[in-house]
Image 1: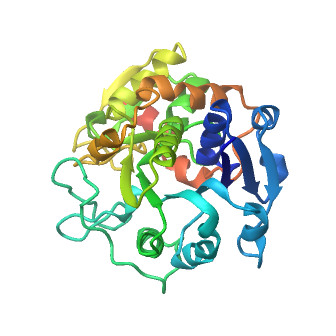
Image 2: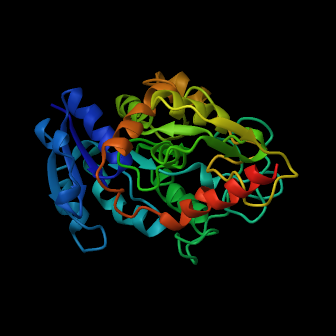
Amino acid sequence: MSRAVVLGGTGLIGRAISRRLLAGGWDVVVVGRDSTRMPADVTVAGGRFVAADRAEPGGLAAALGAGADLVVDCLCFTAAHARELLPLLDDVGSTVMISSKAVYVDAAGNHVNSAVPPAFDGPIRESQPTMTPREDIDFRARDGYGANKVAAEQVLLDSGYRVTVLRPSKVHGEGATKPCEWVFVKRVADRREVLFLANGGRGVDHPSAAANIAALIETAAENPGRRVLNCADPDVPDALDISRTVAKYLGHRWEEVLLDDHAPAGLGLHPWDRLPGIRLDMSAAGRLGYRPVGDYATTVIAELDWLVSSDRLPAGFDHDYFAPMFDYAAEDTYLAER
């Protein structure tokens, strides 16, 4: 039986890969700090939880034990995190690090977290330039996240070990701490009869289903090597498509108000409002043999079911992020005046 160790295994991506590997007959060790976040179905399927914190000396070594066929690191944010992992990889067949599309920069050096939005020339390939690696800035800062991820990537890729770096886009799935679809699910729950979308709902930020990321991780594990791979859904819906997918699945109808440049500032905000849009090229993953689980409409169902059935919002839910997207008073004023 092949053995996998998933660092950060109770999170969104960790849960998805644990479930997929367990279904495929793997022995799976889920590493995390809080056992209460271990999904019950993962335990029932045979997943074993090990409490460990990479910040504590010896924590990773204890979790890894005698080695593994696959290590998935969902919590590698800095070069220091990557260097902590290196001494453990002699007895690992394949390692997958979860990075992000946030590392990419356009011709002007702009990235997804910069003050000026990036303008990429078509779908982004893995060869697209990235941010300059940095270790002197907090990875939680807007300019620090991508730069630290690049530094971590380079440490692992330069090590000589068989490491696959995955760069997903806007991740969705059960267990998300900031589920973007909430902006539409809450509107359904609040029985809003009108939906406002900035820029006509044409914004695009390529979604990445956790289930599709898990499928690519399994493909990489079956084909060990040093590489960088984008990871996103096979289709690229815009915000209007996404809103309609959510409304249709939840059996809701609303009037669509597709705003233009003359609309009041702050009206119709949503998480996919990126023009020019962001799309990831998935050709390299396809050449490796990757096959997605499904398109956006198919894979987002897991998150939607979870959101509408949950009796509480996810731990760490970012109310401040979503608050501007639910300015119902401003919407009602606009409707009354038009």
